[in-house]
Image 1 (tube, rainbow, N blue to C red):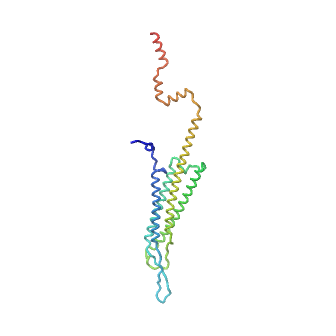
Image 2: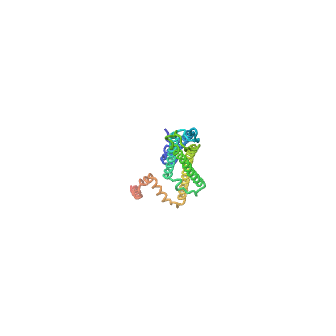
Image 3: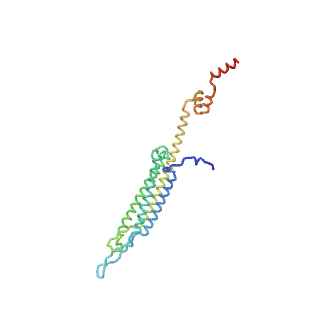
Length: 263
């Protein structure tokens, strides 16, 4: 079986933005947003409604009281699960991105100067937009879910007993929370991809700078003399040094020549 260059290349650490762990957590975050959206739709379909009934007897002034259509357990459970799922997906994704950006070999969005190039400025503005929009959508969606939780939990008991006042959730509140939750995870995915692109662009710039620096140092060094070149070659090549050591010395060569002349 042939061994390729990809097999010999070191694998990316799990804390890298482009690793399999990052892609897996990104998919998990998007699935959490989809699950939150579905739960919000269930909560919207089963939310409590109010029916007004007349409780006045004959000969008295007509009086109306309200009765809930259900106890609110189903929308309460769905909205609670949606609240937790959205929070888990948001915290996991942003925590991983924070750790990955801070521990990456060149921290792309930490030490990167956006004044270097136009692409750096564009990516910086994109990252800022995705970050702010993600947290705004997340905050509004969670607040709407908290409102739904508080309202639906207020009539778990005696919900069928007529009451002069009944507090219900407005139509579309749970649906709006689900849409905001879905937008949250997609904006978070956009932030992740922007951070990944910024890191790769920063690494490319650093590699180009390193090559330019090495080339400058190479051409800026003074030329070597033939003796220095030979010494450097012998130092770098152990075989050459061994051959030189094995050659006879000049004194031994002259003594051998004298003996041959006497003979």
